[in-house]
Length: 354
Ligand code: SF4
Image 1: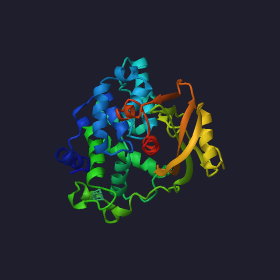
Image 2: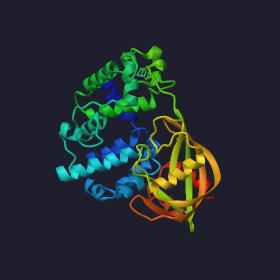
Image 3: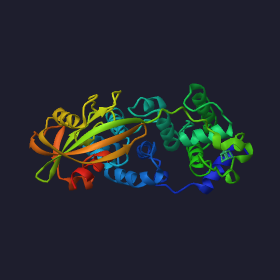
Image 4: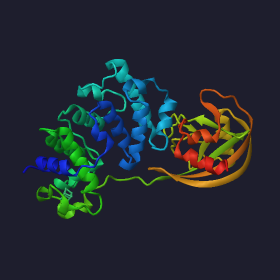
């Protein structure tokens, strides 16, 4: 039996019952694939169900405001994905009458749609022989073909996409791609792969060295940064500013400012300021005049590439004008998920509002 057939047979017998596997709607599959990037399946399921219930069609999502979209995405992280999905879907509505294009190049031209997402939509929704390579697929293929060059280098990436493309050719390319991902998620796991239960074990060249494959890409150590954040309260409400940074673009956040060390930053940055001056500067930047109070506490927040030490100040509000990028909210509104805020802001408010 070929590797391809072994994968399909195994998938038919062992696939997990996931809600997006009951649809061939390219839009619904697109949403699932975007949500699944960097996020665990169990986490995604309720978000995907809520998102599709609220925005069942591209037209419904295109008509939504960014705030509504980010509100539903709140807690999933990597918010840039949501904004790009929103833009991409708006383009589908504007250019293709709300039908996700079957043509691969047209899909690849949409904002936020790269080779992976285009391939997932193409193979699963349109039954086209388009490859996909995500972390799970890369691991399986690296092991089966014993690829010993590191992930992330051009030679490895090209090989992985070629191997995936060769496998996608033939009947049921969507099922084949999902079989590869499923095998990586459930059997060919990063640690302790269950080779004895693997449908391709007899053809796997890397089985005896599986745990050291794939060779990881070289990682930079997370940057240590210090941040001053200010919870500005007035009459039971707190003031939030809409972040323009690459890190939390589009989300509502308490005013904050990174102040050390002196290196490139994704947040507003003022090098070398003492923390309380950084806090004042954060207020000034968003147009709030307030009396800075005591430090309410500190927290550490770790993102993929950054370890943030956040000092949380309280401030009583003297003057600000609500506008497009500044608003005051009742903290209970945040619990209802109507307003898109990051996990970090939620953690800061838990300290500053208590
Ligand atoms: S035999 Fe083991 S290492 Fe090879 S693909 Fe299967 S689970 Fe992965």
